[in-house]
Length: 292
Image (cartoon, rainbow, N blue to C red; front, side, top):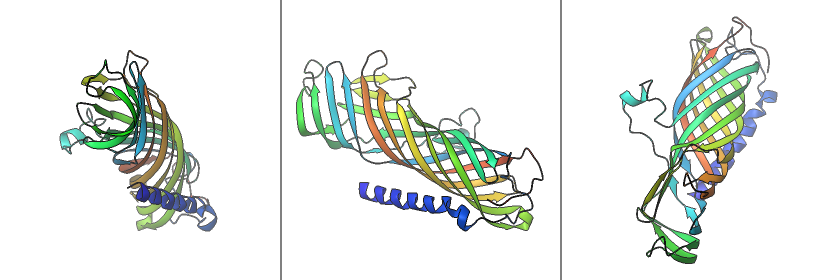
């Protein structure tokens, strides 16, 4: 899994670099009479995602414990598909969602801001290496000093998740690349690539040695990513985008016990695939596309 993950990352970042440099190779006027992504236009999008996470080390420190779990496996936690959830305006934020607002400061170039609501949950019934200590006053079964032993992660020992949100609030620089246009521009396709950076804001839920700690939303660190997408544009101002995002996050300040100074820290390498529906909002209607 880690090797395939890294290979996919390298291939995707290479493709991203090639697409971003395509301004030199593919710089041409759009065949559509109106460029929906012209200078002065906005776009708005909403969609849902599935997320994948590489193995990571997690360090826990608090009163009576200070230990690190190495190479922990985790997965996302998507909501079961129900129309009353995914298409209910009052419940749209429950599934793993993506929201973005962008502004085209130049034809086909935009800056955007948004919120990627992913979910992260460590897998149960896995055995990992542990280093550090747990005070015996906290648990007779798990108390002791550890130096490379393997321990089973189960409900008696630890449940740890960012399922109320492994949230990535990010700003991005994006490039839209027209590919083809049919039906007088009413049906078109384009590629979309971008780089982004922002804050990681998890809402962490942890059960440790039988005690549950449901923590508050908290800025835990930051992240960077690259996004590659394929857009199908229709009626000039609507689009459906299929995209992949590859990113790296560092979280030195994860809150694990609300009223205590206890903290966890970990770095997570992630991959996200999503489908979003969006629309262009032109400020200057009828603006003709320019090169670039």
